Amino acid sequence: MKSNVWAKAGIVIIYGSSIDASPHRHHAIQLIWPRDGNCCKLDDKQISTPILIGSNVEHQLQMDEGWILLVEPSSELGVALSQKLAGQPSRGFSSSLSAFKHSDKQSEQTDDLTVLLSPLFKELELSNQFPLKNETQVVDSRIKKLLLELHQCLDGQCIKPNNWRASEVAQSLALSESRFLHLFSEELGIPWRPYLLWCRMICAVRAILNGDSATDAAHLAGFSDSAHLSRTFRKTFGMTIRQANAIFRQG
Image (cartoon, rainbow, N blue to C red; front, side, top):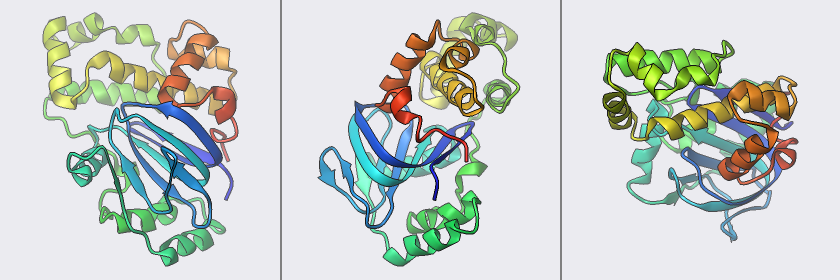
C-alpha cells in the first residue's frame, strides 16, 4: 500500500513507511498500528501490536510501515480512546495476525478507510466509533457553532487566521474575551490558542498535500514564514517537513 494521509477536522490518518520521529509530544491522542512483519519501536522498545499514546505524552517512534492516527481528544473518537487509556500515558493492545492480513488483502482492492481500518477498530472494540464520524462532544451551542465554522475552514473554505483572534471570536459569540477563553477550555479541555495552532498545522499540511510550497502553506495557515512553520511542524510531529514529505503525500 502506498503512503498516504487523510486530514479531517479532528483527525489525521497516515499510512506511511520509514517513519523516524525524534522525541516529541503533541495535543493529539496517537494510535499506532504497525504492519505485521515490519520493525516498529516506541521509545526504543520493540512493538508489533496496536498501541495508544495519550495527549501531551512525550514519545519517540520508528516504524518501517504502518498506520498512525492523530485524534483530537475532545472528539467523539478522542473521548472513547481516552477511556481506553484509563489514566495511563500509553496502552498496548493484542492483535490477531489474521486481522492485519485481511486488511492487507483488502488494501490491494480499495482505498476505503472503513475497510482498511475496520480490523483495528474491531480489535479496540470501537466499531461504532469510526474516525470519519468524528463529532465533537461539546454542550454549549456557541462553541459548537464556532467549531463548525472552524472545521469548514479546514475542509477547504479557508478563513484567514487573523479572523480567529480570541477577542474577535468572543465578540462574534457575544461573550467577553475572558469568558470565551474560560468556556472554550471548559468545553474542550484545551485552551483556545494551542487548539487553534493545531488546526493551523492541519491547514498547512492540507495545503502542502494540495501542491502548495512550504512558504505558501505557511502564509495560508497564518505562520510568519516557512521557517516558523517548519519549527512548529517538527515540534508537533517530531520530524521536519522534508523528512515527512514521503509520508504526507496524496495518493
